[in-house]
Length: 488
Image (cartoon, rainbow, N blue to C red; front, side, top):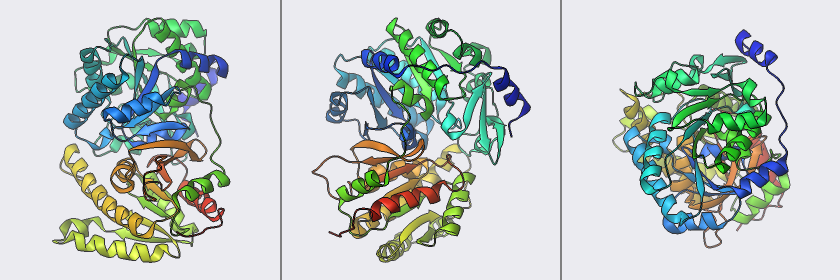
């Protein structure tokens, strides 16, 4: 049940307002191209039919700009990097975007996590510096909107709430606040920004817009956004999809007045800011068509679980308990890290997985005990070693077994699989596998081989109920079985 504070705040708030889709779409089409810098690949779960890049070479960026539509995504994967490397990557990506834009108007969304993990303040600071340096202009306001109602994360009175284990918790009391790399204690977003700035910002230097204002006069909401200047952070409440649509429209109207906005948002705001409506999950026929385009050698699929958040572990447990058609193959991380010959361990796992995939779906997982480093950067190093092992196994299994589908569970895991295992460079977000979450990517490049064309579901570590992974596997399996499977 809701905490008294959240229940009271929602009970006393005015109703959210409907935003006409035609008005939203007209504003988006008349405005700048939205360029989403996704700090891990799970940010695309709310959008459909959108180009996504895993590289930012000039020809890739020109291709994305030329696709038309309201925007595109770039997977930067900065959540897996140290703060120094994350800053450097933001700078290099933005420099490349500005050069490729060649005079086109664009706006940047720095996509972060609805559970507040990531290099929030550092990425925003670097983006502001780089955008000014390359000539885009000085940022007037940074819109901070981490609410993601589809995943039960809302912001009320500047307090961010997360639904976890059957209860609404202030974010600072959730399990995500104990993250080994991005831990925090504050639930008030103004205090959170001050905390993550390590003293360079004070909470009273952060502006805010309350839920009453979001649900009030829409033109007063535009005025409130447009009144912020000097690159100040502006945290904005939201509790449902209509709130996010109201914020998106107001922001676009502020931009039409000449205000230069930079966004730091969860996946929730991406959909309305790109002027998309919520869409149902892909049908069995649509999933089957994606599988058929890859011409797999087996009707079975590979699921890779690297995320160690408690929710992911529960979802893995549910899948193994309720789906008898799945075989788990586990990489024991302590054994791997102690071994003088880790390559031999991984080679045995590859051979076993390829054999099993002829008859069953395979879940490749890591041992569930989390291994923390001596500090945040060391924890990231360990995570990258583990992810490297998953990539090595997945790449070889894809090459040898050519499965019908691939699911990557967890942010760092799914990013590394996309780039280093599947080999995606340019892809299209086809839609979602489950309602409002778990996007499917597929390369549309006919020159690529079947491995790169494998339909790939990006499954965040921190979303869905305990049964969500089980449902995702069942949906992919139904699609694969629907095509009258014929091997290569």
